[in-house]
Image 1 (cartoon, one colour):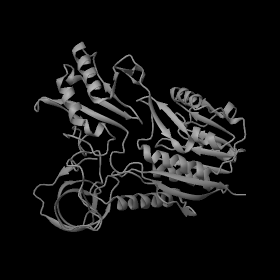
Image 2 (tube, one colour):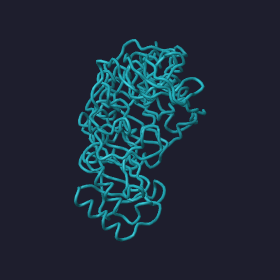
Image 3 (cartoon, rainbow, N blue to C red):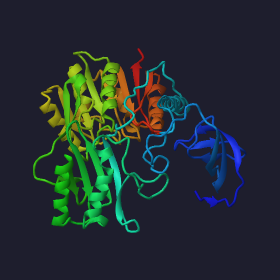
Image 4 (cartoon, helix red, strand yellow):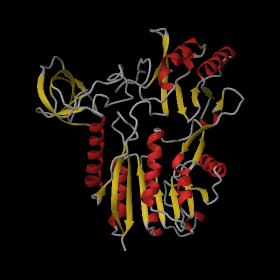
Length: 441
């Protein structure tokens, strides 16, 4: 949608009514105006700078009356860097906003409301992020490389020195990494770094557009040794990723409640918050209410994050995933954990499955779904036809969760027992959610 600049607008005063999905304050003073950096309930002085069809955009001039929930951001780059949106809001208040968003989405988009609201799952709010895709750019005017998230609402790489939400040691390595890239001959040919932090090791994937010269490879090896991390090189697509050094590198995370350890590659999807993932897997298994006679179907199983914990409590579990490489990883993880009652199949879950598929020939007492943001619309009819006693749905998007829960409950065969927020992404507007449904007899 086009935007028109508003020149020399007079300052206005107003009260912030709410936050948008991008954490901008909504001020309803005549035509609604979105103002960044403010919080609900605050009385502010602002100025309109751009006009849109449905609302204007504004900038903050003064906070006249601050919210009691306002706190001082820990990060000196907050407001410029786009990695966080809510560091200026108390952590408990952040959680309340996410709970309200889930409740409103379920009611508005799915016409459902749980019989019970689960207590939110929260955890560490700093140095929690073990996976991230960081932009890199050599800026000639500055004479150096920048590494980090992009600036808020802008395409530029934020000029930061450290990151408070990235897990150690990466959060403290932002400036050294930028200095390393500046020293490389290929500094203008590296657009991206992908970070993966495991329990014991840290992997950083360097995306490079042309082969790196030997002098650059030597500098990378020296940095590895100095900082105790492992570089991977990516000259092409995801399949081209390989360790800088020939020695094998194993990234691994643990789920101690189930005596499970999962190996993964730096390009694999894993939940970005390790502490919350441990609590989430425990809650999911608890909500399923499993015993030795349970037979579970785990849809969108990835590398076995839920499948293997389920296998510790159930008689049998079948994990299904569209990515064949992740299925191979899941099978290897089952073997390394001496789990024999977990089986895995490759299937495209974005389309309705063939009812003759091998993984649909058995009976299932329970189903777990953990789809991507788009949800599991293509699987809803299949899940209902399987008639499991309980369904647990883990979601990273409240809108698609609401739609799918509405479909599951709409036929009258299932009721929504409970739902709750999982604070996987502190200081952002995003949240994970979990819901449990029970078949109506």
